[in-house]
Length: 472
Ligand code: AMP
Ligand code: MG
Image (tube, rainbow, N blue to C red):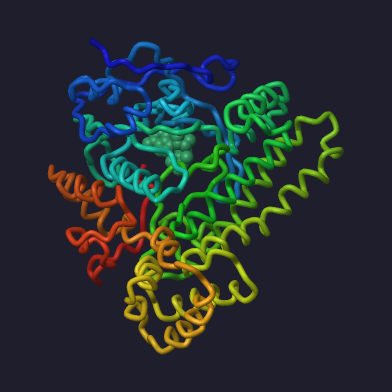
């Protein structure tokens, strides 16, 4: 009996220039580490035995209806165009339409080499697989658009990085894996026909109401505005906002050296490879605009005379910073209990952030602390906070029931870096209790549960994670 997945594939029907057909490479001893039952139900997947799930999501057995392929794309990495990337360690098994009527990709990540692997081994190790599993599901529970995690399987093989590490495969679920870089590659190659069919495909799949290439551009812009402002509101740093990691569907994708900030600072960077701070916390809105400009550059190639749409495309991109600022302010006002943005609120929010940076305040605990009266404790020099607080209280007196708004705008729990590192270290040693506990706690990030109080604590001095790694 093989596992029943109701595949309904569309990408595999596109012309062959978009992908290479590629089966996952079987692994030595697949063992199921985690399976997301709620997501499986949404996707209409009937749960098999653990052994069956391990075989399918480890890549040893192809479920009926799967048409595995590696997708082709390019992208700007740290601002430099790389003319060919593509799934180097992932294969798309196929798509399913969930019980909610939405179409999603099911992709194995770490499933072996593909024609796009370059010098990579096509594999992943346990650490980044569990990290993506926890962080992407936490992101979903926070209400932020994201790819999801369906399964994690240990391979029984050793992956060589800094040393030998246990290998694993993640099953990722996404609204699609269309990236800005998917458009860039065909535009750069002057393949207008492919670019046109990709544009039509993206519109039909994600934004059926959008009119033409510029309609798509506008829709992607609006989705990215919501996404990046949502990241900002929870202190999330993606870490590698390359155009190949920028989703057309507006989901958080490619969890690499990402991190949630503990102590707030706008220039915060975690990624060990981001030496210039291009993808620092506070730069993310600007980078989202830059990435959209790359999409615009690709899409205007569809016109016989790109100059004819240049002005309109430019307007769409140029409107983005203000849209981002508005969305950002709306979210931060909600965090401090303000339903509508009024005169002076921008200054109120900005001043709080400024004293937080100076006072080395914990981002998550300060905002949640505004609700439960512990915000002051987060500051090195609380006097600056006292001054701000009285201004805030004045402003708040004009609001009805700000507590309810604040309670749903300020999570109690985020996946803190030190907890993730501790969870990975335990898992490498065979102990999955911290993983299970984190998953349970983070499934309700807005609940202040007594038994998870320890997960609210910022890292102790010896627990601080200074840098995160791609860990590919
Ligand atoms: P990422 O930084 O994870 O977005 O990956 C950038 C590119 O490198 C993508 O084309 C990946 O498929 C590829 N890549 C990353 N890790 C590996 C690996 N271990 N083997 C082969 N390709 C990889
Ligand atoms: Mg990537």
